[in-house]
Length: 330
Image 1 (tube, rainbow, N blue to C red):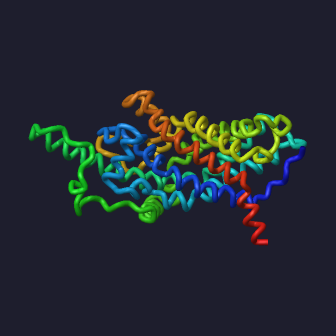
Image 2 (cartoon, rainbow, N blue to C red):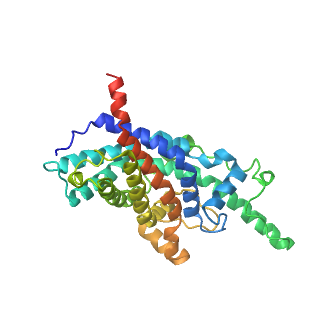
Image 3 (spheres, rainbow, N blue to C red):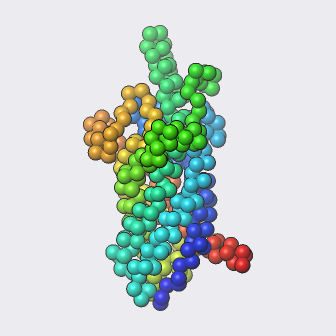
């Protein structure tokens, strides 16, 4: 059976809507992932739940959504490009409606490469905003620890009360606009693309794992359509579960690459934390100071973020929201 022609505008709408819904649902866990991956010196958070609890205590409920505006703004083109590009590449590489495994992997590779144009600046800005709370908490912990060392009092709490938060002399709260303007002024456009190589190194393998795995899981029980369009005929629930499963597997598989990317793109470092000259330098320093286990920091968070994110994405994509919108527009 030949594949249906890809309606690119409809796919772009589907991908955009899927990204907006997915990010809104899982952003707090993504924030915890970023803070855990960047944690090197003072141990502010012991895990995901501890990170979320302390974030709410110190920054309020909406503190869990720091950086969400950037993500929600740019995730629409990012997800749209990723999902639509995969569909287009699959169509181009198919022969008589059939697509071999190498074609599925190559299509995923192409999709991952295309999305980096939007992903890199989005991740760059998001990481600075997400990590600001961790840096403030670490400064409080370090100051409290120094004070208690001379007073020989009880060990200070890792979470200071709101009254103990930095005062007027504290650095201003970062904003996406301020960070963008500062980077453009000091480093030019390439400042927004810091860590592009590491982003590409993460996103291409992710897509090469995710899309073929999703296509095959989505075709279970439909042998005649196994190599055709993964969106065709599969029930909604199967499409959703296939997206969750493939997303979690791919997310955990590339977590070490995500740790490297996050470390490279973090501009502000806490006291005693390393800065890195590049990918190789980052790998060497992390191995030396923190050991191999550091490359799995945030793996659980990534699985919990990516699984529902892509489950929702594939579900919305499957429903054909874009086709319905275009139909209403005539």
